[in-house]
Length: 489
Image 1: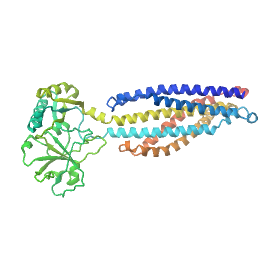
Image 2 (image 1 turned 90 degrees about the vertical axis):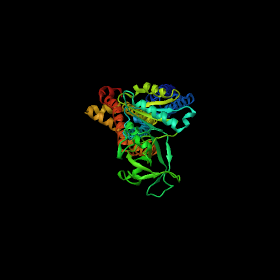
Image 3 (image 1 turned 135 degrees about the vertical axis):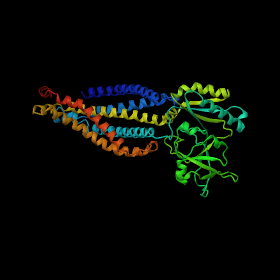
Image 4 (image 1 turned 120 degrees about the vertical axis):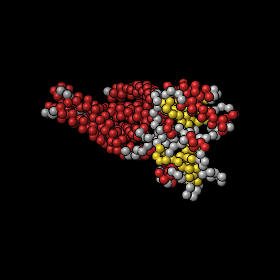
């Protein structure tokens, strides 16, 4: 009889392991396809992401081998069970010999690991939502952007490139549905740092240890097109093109570094060259996060574009309606000035901002997917342990019901065991999650690795999973017929 049981359990283990591996492969395909769909086509090299068959084979082999080994362990245990001990313990004794503490420990470990993944997913979700609420320093609605590249040796002459951009901007502003047009070498939400420069600030000794300032050349309508707020002084005007001495604008970060926002107006700055002219600060504008929403604004100086071989610049077109409807008009207008001019990176500013967040969004989705799968496996583990416990305690349940135990008494008794495992698992998982949060702290934005909302939310979700998983077996135990149960036992 023992050899028959051993053979039966031995055959079930590889069968179940094979079925589990096959289901796992199917789930892997579905999850990967869902992640790529939700991640967006703008995720870097998304078209190259796919299933690696060697990795998949290794994973399936490892999963199948794990299932076989863990499946054979109970079979070995049953084959070594003492018949005298089983008879001494009674009909339910075999269940008590099946290492209940090991079963509970495995489920507790499952719950703890699931909590780590859920807490990590919660941290990334909170971080992503916080990042989405960051003010970029301008209005990204109804804003079409494009990169214009001038082709031809004649544009090496400053007056030629200046004439092209001035004429192109004028024609674009005259288009129906266009409110204003701005020019900047590098628009905000860009990985490029733009031009960096060293400046001497009037009244302050030059400090070579200070970081370089951002230097951006814009047209007079740039701040209106981007709706960057004016904090003090005034914006550029066309008259400033011929103003002597020259004028500049600075952002709030620059003003706070030296003078204060209103006090900066009227101060002067110049380059390090011996013959560099002083330029007067005529206004202070709001900070703009040029390098991305997660990067704080650096001190910057804006100069008025009045010439120079700008062969590649970006335009920002503020429209009165849907900006994408202006794409054809933009193309035809630029080519009416020079048919050889290249137009690239056509996108709305909202699309640019979404694109800058794709990598963070994809990282969040991956961790959320793993966390959901881990929570599901933990729920299956709780269900399995409670269901098995009920099956081995039919005799006890029948006696309890015969002696007057109510449905509520039986349900509470069984669910107490599930909640006990859940509480221990959540306690261990919380400690592990604190450490894991610090590992991913580099991916977080203005969220602490020990964020109580993320940890508390993960614990609440897993507690709910454990309760739901234990409800079915608990009600089954409460619904046993004591007469049939005791007669069968």
